Length: 230
Image 1 (cartoon, rainbow, N blue to C red):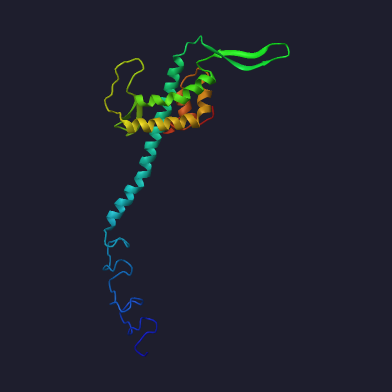
Image 2 (cartoon, helix red, strand yellow):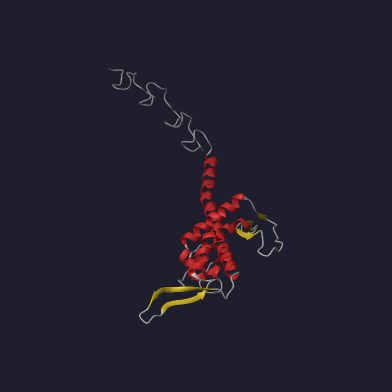
């Protein structure tokens, strides 16, 4: 095999040829494995001739998608938390402050007494637990509002509690908004049930800020409140 190369498909000596190409012409100016395209000056390998700038734009757009999605989710959960607290506080305020509920043990003590006390019903654990089971239905009365300056979304009532006409300019109100807000509300009510009951079991100021930012970080992006424990 003076003029042959063993194992190379029985081909003649491959002067100017690429081993393994079984006789393919020499690929001067070509890049092996890149669709057989001519030398790709200024092009991105693996793109079969697509200009590098297109790939760069695609990568840039792809990198923005996770950030945009995270911001939408953060706006939604922050809005749901604040709306949830608003609705709970409104429901509490509708209860007659003179209404009470008995709390404690009904067991008879040795002296014949019972360790039972009466507490205001409005902020009792029983009432708050009941409210948490149904309060997220109120999210159907909310809409989504976009701040043109910051591009952040907030959630506002589109139906007032007392029938007062609402300013709905720039407010989006549809099934997608309602369903997303309701789902976020239910998730928060379930995950932070203990915290909600703890905060609302007694009257306090700035519950929305303290609960939705300090304790849970759901609104930390907007409020910038320190994360010290309450």
